[in-house]
Length: 147
Image (tube, rainbow, N blue to C red; front, side):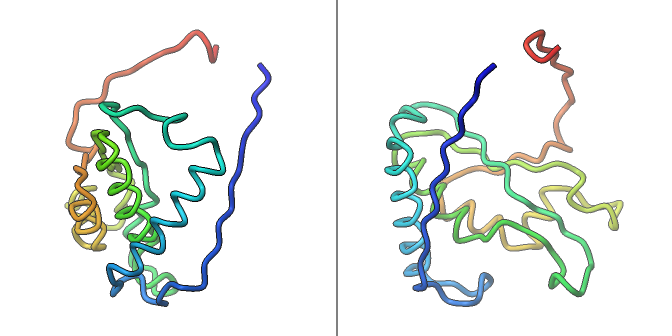
């Protein structure tokens, strides 16, 4: 197999420092950066079509580590902007995570971690839905392509 990856890096200095208290302006800046990224990679239409289902898998690790402020997660501005782009394009967007998000709190799960970190609000503002894999039945899938 011969796979070639494309990479696009888009930078901006226009964002506020806080990921927890961000504005619509921040989301608009990130949205512009993501749109530029898609353009650099051949356009959104080269990756998905209206009506497609798209799964976004963020980094969502809710742990009580003081050095990380309590959680390690994908910037919610990125999640919100990406969900907005995809839902407005006509995709059905799911943002999913599993039980591993919260190993220190046995009674917690992915959905609670989305809420505790504020990432759930970003998903909802983006028009997407949360899927907590720890709430679903596991179905083993095997592919001969990967041996």
